[in-house]
Length: 312
Length: 299
Image (cartoon, rainbow over all chains, first blue to last red; front, top):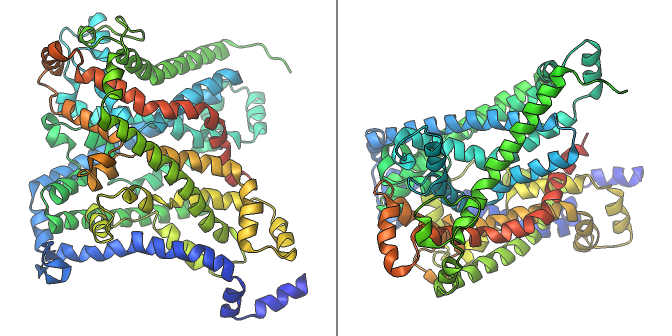
């Protein structure tokens, strides 16, 4: 075998390609497919520097330089969308991390496997329903008249009048964050539970010998054990900071909370698809993409550094 | 070694079990509540107080859905795109994942770079829209299928699963003179089934749950509408009325129709969720294993 391997490595690149032509044949159509569907669209970024009119085509449309970006950056609506995007994704980031870690810690303390599995199975379920269904459920639960939340609060005499939850901007931010927690916590907890199973059991025994109770073991063994996972995910999530949850916001927003629900994605949608301002919306989308790529690269770089330092 | 439970143990257990039961209830209850509303008389629902059991049983809300030809058609489109999209998605994922899993594949690095990079950037909504328009995908059924053929995350899952299989399998098949296509479908495919079941669930659920592509690319074609999009339309009409006390308004409207948008929305929500709830118990024990196997075996 060694000899064969040796002669193989002497072959030129094209000889090897020819030898593996079946593999090339298999994957090549999909390489073209990915280029067409993921790289070619980047070409349309050119219309961000034009005043694109569909009838004149991309080349026939007039160049306007950075005008679209100037308009964009001087629009207070854009900065409002920017604020909302950052606030919403920040709120979602913090709540979803806290919830997933807490759930994983609690599940990890359960010794009864049947109970543990039942709770896990239930907790994943909302992840698999669409945001349309989730939004429908949220609207139903929060409905001012027949909604269960108002009914509970009223029967507990905490409030006298039903609250129009979906009609107030600050509530709306929390509704986004908490409905996201409801939908994704079980799913997000999987990765922490996996990290916990790889913690050396001897560490727990050693902690017991040192006289640690359950809470101290969580504090000094479990949490440090999953700390690399937490920091890695936290950093990688920074790359998603400009994604506040397009579908969720689109489905839950209503005219009353417009000033709190407009995010960058819905801004692009409203201007581009609804008002046909293709160039302007492309400029907004391009700004978002470029900043996102920058954030992802930054996050990856920090994650790589951190990973290297924890491994060494 | 048997240890006596300390006071701390008991308190921790108590807090954990009670909290987790609470989590379970909070997660599950909204579904049960919507289920109860969907089976309850619409006019009666407006009075409130429906928890997990209907007060006045009726199938009226479902009759409205079943008798609506548009929604019937939407269900067919949903099923068609889910089945076709999942089958094609699995085949395409295999065709990409297998060559990329082969460490001796000469074009492995450049091709996997081209593929994986797409996970990190997107051109944005408008360029995508313009691409689909120039490809003639707008207002066709194919806009559901073609752009979703390959999910890079799925490719990565299947690839790492194939990498965990012993490479001698491939070597010996090659010595026996099997072609790569044959190796893929007769050797790799059957062995990769746990990972395939996992991504089939992901792809299928993705297709079944998708509504945004309908909304953006096919809203002019009612005959290509899907269940999720029909539910979204009902939802949008409800959202517009938030703050104008929707229940009362709908109550007035209901006098003549015996249904309210709220009740129809509830039954529509159940219809749109039912297939997932039905396949979920069969597949859910696989996906965690399928997802983690690839990475665990790497250690």
